[in-house]
Image 1 (cartoon, rainbow, N blue to C red):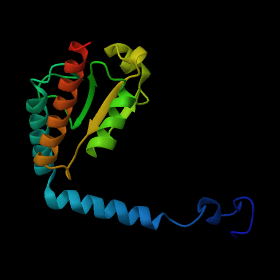
Image 2 (cartoon, helix red, strand yellow):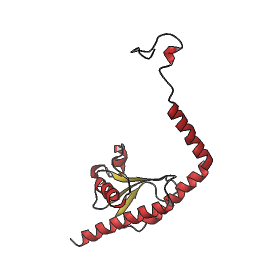
Image 3 (cartoon, rainbow, N blue to C red):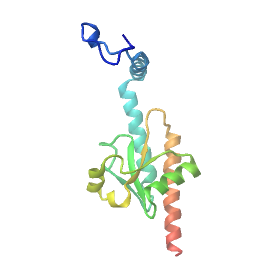
Length: 160
């Protein structure tokens, strides 16, 4: 029946439009198995530790703003940031090309959220996301890099 250009109109064939997504089903099964082996509690604790490391690492970074809830309690491993004097796309490009840190910049399919936080007219934010494969060392590197970039921008602005 696969050579027909429309679904059959008889049962049960009319409700069977093709092969099951076996690769997707297996992938989902393995993903659930992976999470179950590590436990949601351990993965959540890892995320909270990374959030704490991130917040601590940027706490003294003058010229760097992060958006969203303050503190770690009501956060997940996603941070939207801006550094004074940088367009979000420019910051993403510098992070990737000079430091190997991948981010996403812009409005993030959320124009109303960016209107609410006041970043829509300025190109949005640069977003960093982290999860179970990111280490504390990775996070320390990322925050040190952001602080360094912010400090360099401030120093350059002061010499003008």
